Image (cartoon, rainbow, N blue to C red; front, top):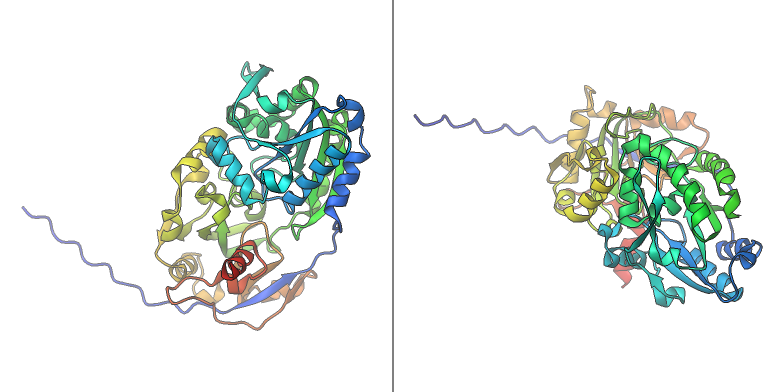
Length: 448
């Protein structure tokens, strides 16, 4: 007997989306005027010269995070090390990123402007490691072979809250030492036991490696809420365990956050590893989506939508599982290989689940407002941000106007205007955020 034909779905009427206004958040925070000079000062005033043999080879770590001015920081470090009579080289220190391959990691560095020509020194990206011991769980401790064979190592990394857990040591010098220089195998072993293991292994393995590898100096970078360099701090290896937790507390106070504790809809223009190791920073959106772990208490967001992948993330959409809605084009841009490698290495699989997708940005915004538990779109507390790293400019609906006016750091800069979509129904992000990474990228492409 033939099966009955399904009734065609009745299309909903086109929703009239509420207007939005631009809001600027102004901070009074420290900022380094000459980053290269500060890096040079930190190295030349350190004890590096007494820790490395004359003419020795010094490995300088180069990670995969979107650190502000990283190419200038690394070039200054190379020049300062060479001025002391040593032979510097950079070593790719990014765990499993770049698909866990030499070519992938070198390509990621090149996108940050970190090439041998620009740095004036060799860059080693081989994935080979040496096993230097075992941890308390009986798992091998892997360490980058090139760094291990050097006469000295300078750890360079940004200190900031981790995207998966809270502890005395989160993202910083110890993480660069244990996970970045652990390469894919080392990163896998540290993450093997999930969050409990990660919180235990980071300080344990870091302490072990500080004693058994030629670490000669740490250069800690702190960034402010505008994603500019706030401080450059030289840390001697024997001080790292004591100093890093204090720098982490300082970083936590400086970092950018959403200025609202509750939103009905948050629209994020781009997701990417250049903005957060998780693509979307859980410390900003309040969602962790880690197995067995609760989300953060604030902010509370009913509906989270993401529109695009950044070019810099190279198809790695890790973090898309934090969203409720996305676009068909984002799903089509996913490269499953680096996302699979990254997810399996970290052992956090929920963050890689792909949410519902729709053809256009307009449809995503309409669906977000339609399902955010408000009786009318005009009641929706909606905010649009370019990504979870650049949070000084955002666009909000009228329902958030009282919150903006009550916040001493926020200022309305425009009237409430129609949301700008192109002819395909996609958000004109470059018009909304010309100063963002995406906006600058578009401007460079138009003049190329």
